[in-house]
Structure formats: structure tokens, C-alpha cells
Image: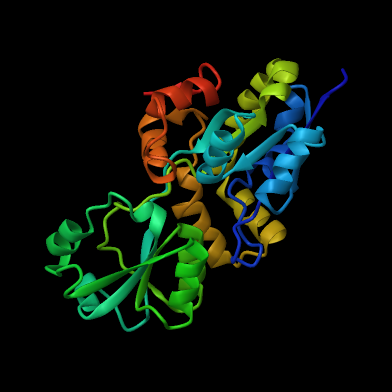
Length: 299
């Protein structure tokens, strides 16, 4: 039986020294012949740069792209050309990571915390600091809004901030460098839809049936990743240079957030739209009806 070729492209998180793919499951799926079982021959390739991955979709050298939700939503709003097949991770709350001398939330009194501006929108920081540490925002603790997660990470690492709210992979690297995770901090800062699975409207019309098969195989692949810890840790070390401790944290605190249902949670879409383009006509329902393929949305 001849196999259907699908080329999947993904990016690595900038500023993490090439150590983090948002979704590394494809490597194990290829190795375990999961895609082959479904009649697919899948390539899983790193292509850095969101625009370059869009270019490859447009010229047909790739058929599927894994994209962070804020970028994929903005691209759709600008172009209308893309379609979301599903979502491999709907939510992955940020960690609060601090300089080594800070061990608990109360130690942030008189300190400054960095957070990227987008995820900080609509977060009840005042109530959270008061409830969990009796700290008053802008008096006892200062929140500094940065332009990117990488900027917040660099401010922490370079000693310009006492703490930072970071996506988990950045937090893991900071911990590897001796910084401390503050476990008292609740899950109130998030980056909704961190892994969207995208194609173009043109490719969807041409290959819709193949994409449905891919999604079925990818569901199995994510389940395999999450239930084969030894193989996953080995793959993370081989492909991305993870130390055993970093690979363990990635498995236990990041990859567990992957959702093999591969559907978009409407509430997370609403959150994302409120961060990216809150005044979009028709709101999240209208965006969903145009952007997300039928059957890929859940309420």
C-alpha cells in the first residue's frame, strides 16, 4: 500500500537555545510507526519563523503547521487564508520564577515582577497578591509588563527583575540556572491555545480526508508520548539536548498539558481573542465559524 505524504512543520521557542518544540510528539509517532499504521508518511521538521512556515503552506512544500495561538489567530485576522484543524494544547498556565533568595510569595515585598503584556490582560493581580501573600499591587510589589516572554525571561536572568511570570519551558531553563519556582502562585496567567494545528483553506479543500486521518493518528501519538515516559525522555535528550532533569520536568509539567482530543476549547478561544483583538466584529463565535474546521470546536 502506498502511503500518503504529509509534511508537518513546527518552530522552537525562541530564547530557549533550541531546546523546546511546542509539540515533539511526531518524532515518537514516526519512530513507533503510528503514522504508518494509518497509511501516512509524515515528516516532522523544524522550520524556525512563523512567516516562513506560512510561506511553506502557501507554496505547498508543507501541508500542516504547528503555531502558537496568538500568532495563528493574528495571521487569520489579517489574511483569512488559514484554517485550524485542531489544538494540541488549549492551556498551559505560567509559572512564577524568582531569584534564588526568594522562596515564597511573601518574599516579593518590595520587589518587581515581569510578565508579558498580552497574558497579563484581565488577570486579577491585585486580588491574587492580596489573597495569597497580603501584598498590595503597585505598593508592596510592582508588576512590570514586557513586550515578550523572552524579554521577561531575560530581565529575570540578567538580574533586572526579582521574579517573572513565564511559560513553563522558560521556567524550566531558569530553574536549571538556579532560579526558584514559587509554587504558591495560582494558575491565573495563561497563554491560550499554545499549540494550534493549521493549514490553508486551499489545502483543506484538497486534502481534507488526509487531514482527518492525520488527526486520528496524531491523537494516538500524543497518547503514546504521555504514556511512554522513558521513550519520551530519551527522545528529548537526543533531539533537543535535554538533561535528564530538564526532560523529566518537560514530561511532568509541560507535556501533560497536551490534549489528545485535538479540539479547540471555546473559552480559551475567547480568552485569546480578548488578548489579540478584543474588538473583532462578531466576537469569538464569528471567528470560530470561519477559522476552525467543523467538528474541531468544543464548548
